Image (cartoon, helix red, strand yellow):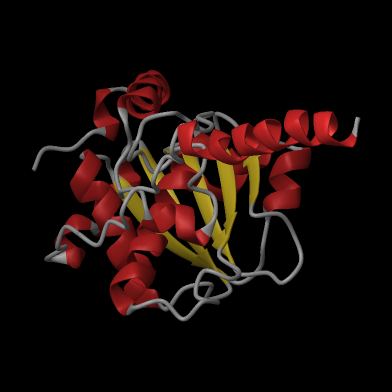
Length: 222
């Protein structure tokens, strides 16, 4: 009986040992994307009269970003997507006010600010606070905690503005392979492996909403 059991068990063990060789190989992670479009003439891209017509407003709250980095990232959004973009500094967060009363957005920033994205850096709190169709607060906490190269930190900063804009427009995660809103791009490593652009599943719905709430005037000519 012992010999019979060994005869049955040994072939079974051999079969099990070979199984992993026949398994499908793990899908390799996409490479990190280290290409950034240069942004020149930031002041030209962020004109003082941008607030006179429908615009996307980026707000730097309590110095969440150094002013030069903040303006450069906002200018990138304007340049890449031909949107009328304005920038502003605020001393205190205001997300709770807007969540409780969406009309407060108009009271605070005027009717021309059709979408508002606020940047904060808070040790406690969620990564995003969203009022779809109006507003997004983006928490930049931990964006540099792994000591990234300057290029990747600049890239992440641009990405967070784009994520905030998409969330404010009611856009969630997508499956587009290099889209800044890809479903697995909400970690530092994930962000480094996608681009600083929207894929079609994020871009076209966002475009439609912006046109609906801002009209043609929210778009600018190069």
